[in-house]
Length: 242
Image 1 (cartoon, rainbow, N blue to C red):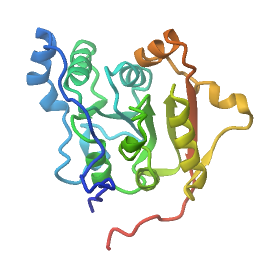
Image 2 (cartoon, rainbow, N blue to C red):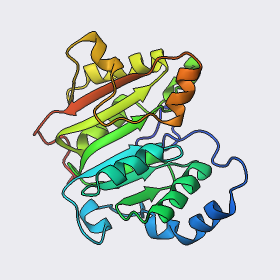
Image 3 (cartoon, rainbow, N blue to C red):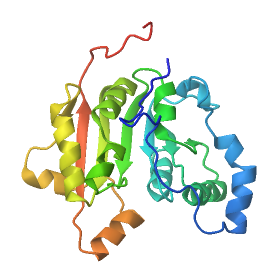
Image 4 (cartoon, helix red, strand yellow):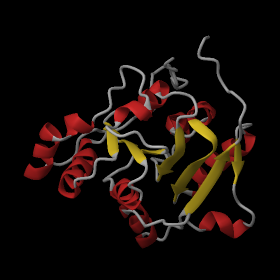
């Protein structure tokens, strides 16, 4: 059953912002027209991970808002035994990743070029092992806080699609968005924050390689924070017969 994560204004979805930037390079444009249709997920119907790839995987990871795709690409290369999903509405970032997939020949990545809530709503219960949300738009003005991707509704949806003990990994260089996210995680009945000391959320998870957004933050003097939360279980959150 598809779930509506409409924001408080009544607008369905959670994506706000531009979809196009500068003109695409030739390789990127050709990759979008040639390769992307083979990688694109059809979110107009249920997306069953085991049916998406030619060979089913045991585990599946999702990255929301992958930007230029550097982190997603490295994960897919480092973990060929895992199926990787990515969502990115910004066409230039999508084109950059699709071109890189074409060069590397990877076949364990599938992509959605629109709002991530569309994909989340079509995924079955307990179908993912990990969700990454890295350096999302912080929407710093108070009147725009409702546009932030992290909310009680999206955390509940993360909990629905994550397997018990699955991980939600969040990174940001904006302190008040880190606090916003942590406050909602601590209130959630579905997640445990995996930090034993105050220093833990300043250390990235194992295997982390910096993204271009993080490099920019460090150049500008902002300190990144990393939050890892584990999905509790094995209670059933929703009944899709409703």
